[in-house]
Image 1: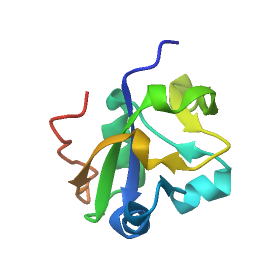
Image 2: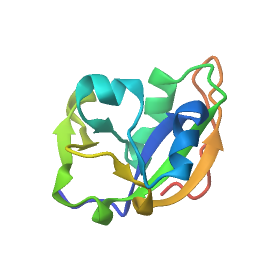
Image 3: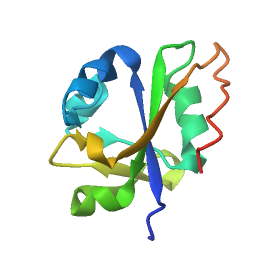
Image 4: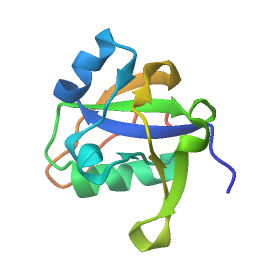
Length: 118
């Protein structure tokens, strides 16, 4: 499967803020529990936010360059057989983050994605 230029990491502002003063982000608690970092493609992002982040207003979306992650980025089947990107064996290097943007998710799971998501 050809990788898209960007994949997206959703984090709480509280979890991501300390990483800004370092060179990497260790991820969210679910990433630690699963032993890999969860990402979504542009097409998967809204549904991931709807399913897992309802009623949260303190979120940040990180646009991550797939080319910067190398062989540690693995595509695995998940919801309905869709392939989701997962990062194994290391934290997310902040040098791979092209941009970040805040996002809020309403109680019904709806949200407005940044225009730059592609």
